[in-house]
Image (cartoon, rainbow, N blue to C red):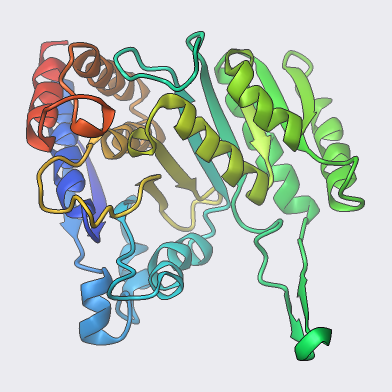
Length: 352
């Protein structure tokens, strides 16, 4: 019997509704597997915890999480109670940075039964590999002077190590998929960092002669995500460019509520973390209509990471079958509740 110990942080808002839904699906998947089980340990770290304790997690929170194989996160944030910069940097970003989760991956694909805003989605199926530790989101910089002379300096940091590991990870992923990798760049406008990115991409590509490659400037690439997303397989991008592209990916799927994500630790020292892209959605919290797909798809990504790719594919198949049958939450054009949608996915999974 394979047993995985998972830290669970439902977080704020609808995280407390969609996380239990995804755990039900994971338990159903374990039942289908027969030789697999999960031990979930839940932690009540969120904005309410901050209001009581003055921090988003205990001082030894990271040490506690380090003993688990993975962290399964719901949603973080409740701006009516706690400013976003406190909630995010005190929990989500803290875990990403301290646990060296240097790669972020987000898939996007056309799902039959969800209306894409694209006239012809052409069955796109892509995944973005985003450098997750440096780049444009570095903390290097500051403000000086006041009044009309006030100045803000933001330094983008691109190291050889950080750039190469993201690009190499993307090449390895492309080799397991359709063998095509696209690089997001802007070397015609960003003078130093993007030519450096291009040079590393070209050098690493020599180690993967069987992988077809392409490179597009980010403005054109963003447009191609809308006009011809079906041409893409794996896309590798810097922190900022990856952030932008993945939101476009969620948009062309038809709802940010269905988009999953994974924050990957590569050195094995710390657990990876799995979270949906959507927020805590306080406007629908408690109504029982939150879309569980983003969290369930995230669970599928966690299964893949734990070495259960075939089972992960079965979860994705069951999820798509439920949507295609018309059992959908209101945000994607249906009338089903969170529970009804989850129950149907579990039922279909057990029949596969």
